[in-house]
Length: 251
Image 1 (cartoon, rainbow, N blue to C red):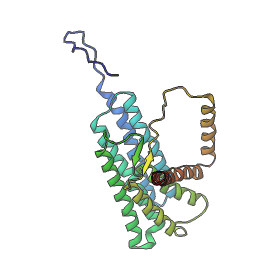
Image 2: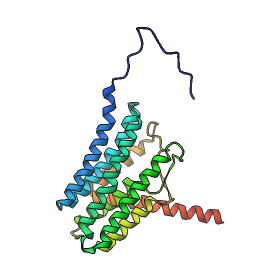
Image 3: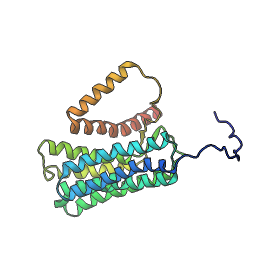
Image 4: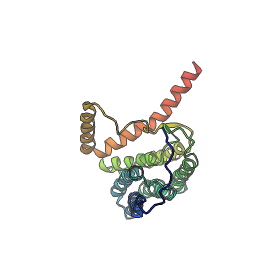
C-alpha cells in the first residue's frame, strides 16, 4: 500500500539527510566481488586452479550480499546496478572461462579457446539481457541460467576434479562440453527459479533452522562435492521443469 508523500519541510528543522558515505557500503561488497574474480584470473595464470575456483565461490557470496545491503540501507542506485553488472562480467564471465581454458583446454587448440569464448560471450549476453529486462520480467524466474550459477558449475567441476587427483588433460573433453553447455544455457529461454518469493523476514518453523544447520555442516564437510552437486541440481531443474510444462501443456 502506498501513501502520498508529505509536503517538503522548508524550515530550519528539516530532517537530516542520510550521509552520502553510506552509499560506499554496497559498492565495497561489489568491489570485493570484482577483486575475487580478478584474483581468480591471476591464480589461473599462475597454475593455482583450486584457489581460482574458491575465489569464484567467494565472489558469488559477495555478489549476493551487495544487493541485499543496498536494499537494507536504502542505497540502491543506477550506478550500483551498472557497477554490479560489470563486476559480474569479470567474476562470472571472464574468470571461469580463463580458469577452465588454462586448466583443461590449452592442448585442444582452437576448440579450447572457442569453448571458452562461447562461455564468455554467453555471460555477456546474459547480463545485457538481464539489465534490459529489469522492472518487466517475472521476478519469480530468471530467463536463462544466471551467470553466477554457470560460473559455479565450472568452478565446482574443477574443484572436485582437483580434489580427486584428476588433471585437466584427463577430463578435457568433459570440460569442453560443460563449458559450452553453460554458455548456451545462459542465453537460452529456459526459466530458472530465482527463489525471490521466499520470505526471509518472516517467521519459520524451528525445524527449518535445524535443517539449515545440518545443511551447513554438510557443506563444510565436503565443500567441492556438495557445492557442485547443489548447482548441478539447480541447472538440471530448468530443463526438467521446462519439459514438465511442455508435457502438461500438450496433455
